[in-house]
Every structure is written in structure tokens, then in C-alpha cells.
Amino acid sequence: MPTRTARTAWNGSLQEGSGQVELSSSKVGTYAVSFPKRAADEAGGTTSPEELVAAAHSSCFAMQLSAMIGEAGGTTQSLEVSADVSLGPDEANGGFMLTGIALTVRGEVEGLDADGFSKAAEAAKVGCPVSKALTGVQITLDAALV
Image (cartoon, rainbow, N blue to C red; front, side, top):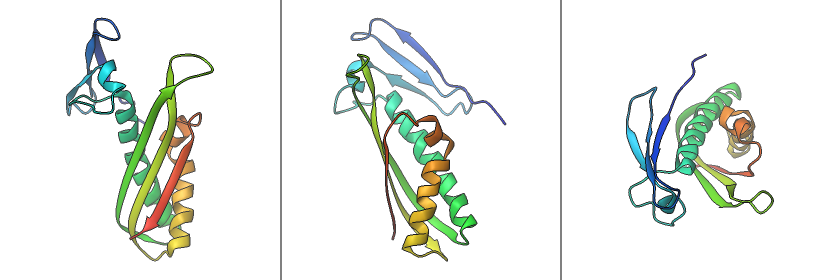
């Protein structure tokens, strides 16, 4: 299986510095990062580790759910997945930590009822490689057919 790479170049202190994250394997882009914007409510045109984790988690979960739906005898027509990744203080160790991930999925699926879809979504939440990597973070799931 392949290894994927991203690279970050950072200049300056935490508060005054900034950096650029490069998606090296895909070469699809380089994105600005800064701590003040990471910690702010408005991203101001920059990305953050949390947004990148959210992108990884939502895409991984969608792929895993599609597989679980197929294993359950259903056919995926479409899935709309979002992942909301929260950053907050780490009271035990200082600094910051991911405080939670909320996965939301709405699906159009043939061959599964709401209960079957919910079971497939729970299995995908557990089986998704990104979920497995994030076992130290509380992950919630809201799954429904549309």
C-alpha cells in the first residue's frame, strides 16, 4: 500500500509566524496556516490541522461506508459526509488537543432501510482507517437516509 506525504514550511514564532502546508503526494495545492487563525472562529482564508483532519476523516468515512453498504446488500447512490473537528485546551497535559469529531452523513441508498443504513454507518465509523487513527478523540455519528 502507498505512503502519502504532506509537508509544512513554518517561519516565525507561534503567534506571529505562519506557514504553508503542501499536499506533496497529490500536488493539488499549497495552503496557508497560522496559529492565530487556527484558534479563531473565522479561518480568514487559511486552513488548519483540524480542517485537514476533517477532510481526511470525511473522505475516508465515505469510502468505508460505501463498502459497508455494499456488504450489507445495498447500493450507494450518493453520500454527503461532513466531519466537524473541534480544538480545545488539554487540561491534563497543557496546550491543545482535538476535543471531538462529529460525523454527519446523509445518504441515498437502494436496498437498505434506515436501520440497515445506521448499522452500516456505525460499522464504517469503527472500520474507517482514519477513525482507527483517532481513537483518542470522541467521535459521534449522525446518520440518516434522505
